[in-house]
Length: 498
Image (cartoon, rainbow, N blue to C red; front, side, top):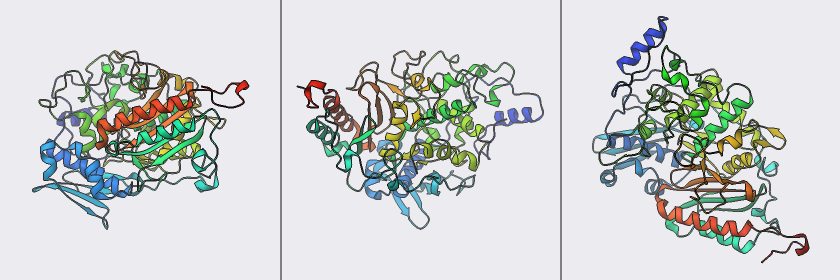
């Protein structure tokens, strides 16, 4: 039986399933008919208000941004365009709360310390778990050199660049990432051979600012699964150990951990990337509901029936990384402090990350499909871990072969664009070598790992940057490849070659 706190939106069928398991009768096969599983509840307007309230709350209380700037640049996309000008919002700094309204309709999100901001359910002014502090065991960052800390000594603090880098082109690349201002780039950082060779931030943002990262958190989920595999607690090809899928005749029992990592589980879960999706006629999508519905996102995902046979069809759907999140929670004894502190203890402290805000639903489940906040340097460290094949300063953190797995094309996808919760460059979608792969999130959030150039590139920005942000990043990447794509020959004495 699935561990869960009280969930208001349970359907009668789920209650019968739980009762059957409790009585020892076993879970019946999952329903396959339309309407026999949880659906989004609430209007697009109400859910959009909830999502925007959460994003504004995080911008103010997690990122330290100014409210008016954040309202303009972030979160508005949750609400139908025709409603955006009607919104009224208020930030209560004493209660650390944000409320958004349209007429009499309102939704609230509140800041809960190291669990960040959480949407309150429509009929409950609070959450259903006890927040816990998440602390690091590492010393002050300025006491340790990069990459374990932030002590001066990299190119960003004045140390000379490697002789093979074209300094002029590198400078132009960084400038291009921020041009025009309408790109709304917040941070741009370049690692070359493990060193920070370029780093720049927008006004009022610095290297300690926790910025919106969105679906880059999916790659973080993959990393945490990799940690569990390295510890022997999960296997890549084992059936996903979800108790609710173990009933007689349940076809979901065939879903492997591998399938979930490759977004090929086959679970029915509506998404804006589905073929035939039409925003004008489609109902509110499951993909967005996990962000805005204030529901138990693990239960909501696990209860989906199959649409396709496991491992047969690749679809970009939030349910797969959320089921993986459930497995992470189960490996830590279920909901509670051990689970909420696991990423810090098992991963972040080992690679120099002192704080990364991983937000939850009202039931204490990490929403790492999108509600995650980190600094540019945090993401650079994660990229460096992959560039170094999952080994950090001599310590293996990810199992042998795992990095090759996440950067290899998922066979169920029609095009070689997706790996194991990482996007791939096999079709040349970015102006980078073909071996590049990336953590990617809405609003132009990117961590590129380029093994052939020994390069990691981090770009963070705000949603309103849109196409301008994409074009700015492409120009920056083109210049960056030109800046680092040449090597000095011994005869050249370290000079740049023409």
